[in-house]
Amino acid sequence: MKLNLSGLSIYIVFGKDKEKYNISKDKSPISMYTEEGEIEYWFEISSILKNEEVIFDNVKYIHLSVYNHGKYTISPVKDRTYIHKFFSELSSLTGTENFTYSNIETFGFKSDTGILFIDDDKKDHYEIQLKFKSQIVILHHFLSFVHLRKIKITDKTVQEIQLKNNSEKIMLEKNNIKLHEDEEVVSTYYLKKRVAWDENNRTVNISTKFVITNFRIMQDVWCYPVLFDKKPSGILGKPLDVNIEKILSNSIINFTHDEYDDVFALNVKNTTSSSTTSSGGTNAVSFYGVGVNQELHSYAGKSEASESGDIVFMSKGKIFFTWNKFVDPKGIVEMIKSAKKQFKSQDEKMPEPQVSLSDDDPLKILKKRYASGEISQEEFQKIKEDLV
Image (cartoon, rainbow, N blue to C red; front, side, top):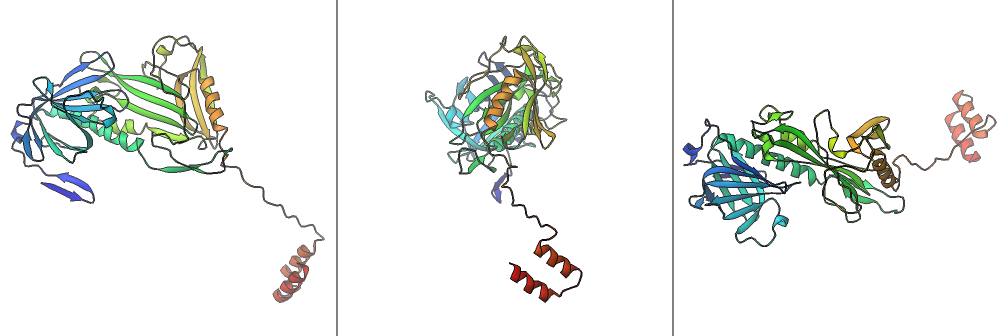
């Protein structure tokens, strides 16, 4: 049964498969890391309903494949065969697949029955029955993070900006990662922060992407499902105690060059390698890639830069925003300042004409006579009109 309240769909499930959902047995999903940086998960399921009808007989797994920076797919698997694919974005499709596919529009969970709901762009509704609560916790937290991130990076908040060489005002959706038609990427940087270790002693990373454009500064965040497993240990290794997905979504921040007054490098120190810097007091591995008007993949290894430090943005005498432990911070600051120079200052105002009345000014004398009661209001107005 489906209820619709003010555009929100709420599903009430009377599932015959409810007894197959195990809330007591702890069983981790199968996982695998690939050399390309992809992480694959296999979650055990008992059935799939499409528009309330059972489909895909004997399907045993849901396969989750997660890529860098916002890409993932969900696929029912039967005898190691992928029989359908739900894409996070249709742009992920290469055109060579020999199975059906659809784009994920919305999703949801019914925690007491362990059912994952997916509504796709083909107007089909799927109900996927998972077997183990320990597995659905990971999938639920990951998809919740994906949902919160999508809200942030597609936000429609419009900010008005104006450049010195253009009298027309530009209406910019400043939180949307999609570039404005007149916007160009100046440089892109990546940082991977190690925050935990899983049961196989593999590191759990949060990837942060920093982008400088001619209009704004952009910071995006991405993580893998293993972060939400209750078994990893480390700084953020307890997803049941803290809302990590909300913490991460709050780290997605964009602002235009006219929102801060100044930017400078702080705590600059000599360095020999970009792969040994730390961030936020944690053990971290940083990878930086730099491109001019294009995006390049990050790389590891020695950096030609001899300095590292923090990049601090100031507004009205206070710290507005900080990037920690960047290689070549002085060079990056100069690049940012160059982009900022094209903006009209928000503090620039047309000088108002100064009116100064000397002691012998007739109008000033008239005002004094009226203030002292020497003349009435009617006399004051009549004399003032004669003076003007």
